[in-house]
Length: 267
Image 1 (spheres, one colour):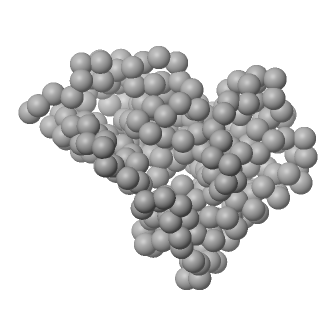
Image 2 (cartoon, one colour):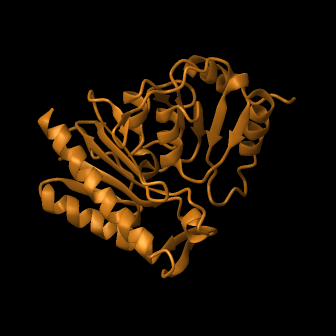
């Protein structure tokens, strides 16, 4: 337990340092495309650098996997690897570029085959979502609990799309499906915030077919510790290194798995 608390504290510190940096760079950053519509800024690389330096100083024996490493590797380090920090220095870079205040720093710790610490910090609202396995989930000092919604018709559903949706038009079939069956569907542009909002009860369902491990790493423990559930969309056990994610408030999970097993329906 002491290690988990120490690791979480260090991740919160790193996220806060990075958040202050992002806010200070808001009016002074450069942008380029990594791929079609996939933006990266010098704020992303600067944020990742300060996170890496802080965590490396605190935990020199830990490994590090960041979105902006340039390696493009999302390989499971395995149960015998050292604790591995998985970082998205700005989850929601396009929002950051447009000054849309829906972006976050996401930091997760993967150890012995599972995520054990998760931190998501929203600089715009100064909200620190944090959790450690078995020790609960919080936003700042307030405990988190998922919603009590049990009906899809009363649910707020969130999702994420890839930057380039060409050839992936089936995603819009699911958008239409849930738009006809839920209270609302939202795409806010930050997977980390989507998962934090599931944990806090602001949203009830999140699904996506194309996540990267650094997108979800900070939010997995938040959802689990707040009483939610996360699997692949077919209900099989979750793996953060696979692209599919289905996260719910827990009470609706079987219902959502059934929706995906039946496929998108017209009307």
